[in-house]
Image (cartoon, rainbow, N blue to C red; front, side):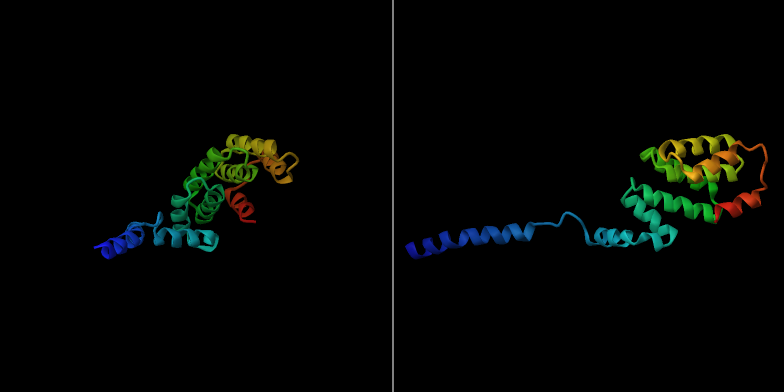
Length: 155
């Protein structure tokens, strides 16, 4: 019996290791890993993919900005405004997003909103020529036709 007892004593750590490895589970699934890999290169992806990536990383301001830009390009300005405002809620110091929002608001005829966005952009990007020009256009009494504003947006 002592031979059997010695064999059991020698094998029980190995048996515990096998049980541990059999029950060990990976913390993330493979589909999430693939999705994150796609999101690393998402900026060349369709809008639906960008939105899926944003669901995985809901605080990604760069992704929100890209999605907002895509909405503007497609004429879905309400959704673009919402996306820019969402980005600014996360990073209110992002002067580029303030500029995008200001251009959008000016394009839609919201002069007061565009002026506020231009001033915010200048607060975070002092001396920005683009922000100064946006502010000048927002303060200008001259009203541009929507087609001119849209053409300027896509430059």
